[in-house]
Image (cartoon, rainbow, N blue to C red; front, top):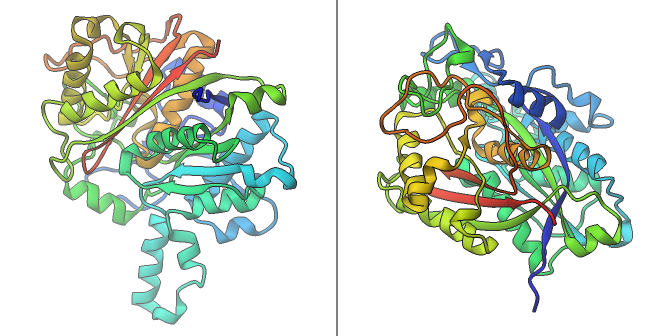
Length: 413
């Protein structure tokens, strides 16, 4: 049986750089940082006091009625991005065929700030004062559920919760769902809105976050020798994936193809990547094999690029381990240098960047690359965007627990 091709026909995004795909992409190409002082919680007694927040987001402008009040912020962002994506794809949803439309979303923490608030209410006022919407708001699967309820999508529905690899794995699994014939259309991507004192405490005690509070815009500096940790962030992005047959039958504008997916485990450590990069190498290699492309065909890599001392070296090692000498000729850039690390949502935002790179012929830069690190010696497209003819792009995502997910996006031809 001929393998079904899976294509992208629409995108929606809310990021620290803007409230749409266009705003976010324009900020990335301009090399503008969306990181600033943290406002969503009081960080005054923590060493990290900066974040990539989605500024100016008002769920009432996107979600009808009072429904938004029953959603945690991560769900609000996810539903809003889904509505944008469906509009962008000019996708009509017929109730008669809505069972062929599904949702598969990536998420890391669910409604973390709502969880913290619920615990505070219980301790201070008693358990019976906790909101009856506590569970429907906090559970990680509720973003996918709320998208399906809002749009009336009655088909395949699931949530991937693999930390920072979640969005990439969701996109890959959504593509597989379409290929095996379980759906005609899938909404996929990721959402995260976990900025809270509890989340800050967990990462700060691990010493995982940047403390460059006086220069927020320079704090996220992937692959730079003076990087000191990642910057917490939030956001959401949703892609509309369709089988090629379905997209062509309705005359959709096809943006690109989701060509390949690879997923592996380091089986090594709770939070640290395995130093040889073996698990990451296999995930990239399997994604290329799944796409039917060679190492020579990769024109661009969107790196996981967290700005942590260990991750950036290991990812560089892994890229060199797979591509050999050609690794030095492949442009590599980190979206997180400008938007921070939105955990389970990060791969979705980076998917948008990869797709716009292919459609627009521009690679966004890795900003704040000032001091070369001998352990990070590839072409990271430092500080300024670059015009390039990118036909095939590889997106990397590596999560806590050693979970790796890589996606190959290819120009639709």
